[in-house]
Image (cartoon, rainbow, N blue to C red; front, top):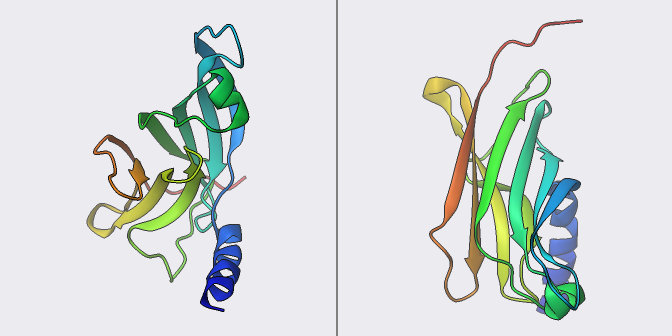
Length: 153
């Protein structure tokens, strides 16, 4: 019964996370069988902070395992977030809140983006990192957006 409640809770939280749109990709390693290894560039809008779009670049493993979704992608990723419209911070904004999550291996590894608000500098900070059930990776990337007035049309 607990497992069912946990799954239902997860399904309720998933719509609050952003989903990424692929912007483009480049091939990095040719594979004779299956897709090539590549770097993918994706964009997502912060689901709680309108006016913010983040761009992620990350490695995707190819080959037979990659084509079947069984390969483990590398932990390296890069992030750049930008103000693309007026920003209105919601009252329930939490530091370290997860705004994007994607599986990077069959079961145990994920890439996550979390958000922080630097109140002193009026700046949103986004951190991308990879973790694993047993052991995560210290590799990470960070980007910051100073919240600026947005011109009215």
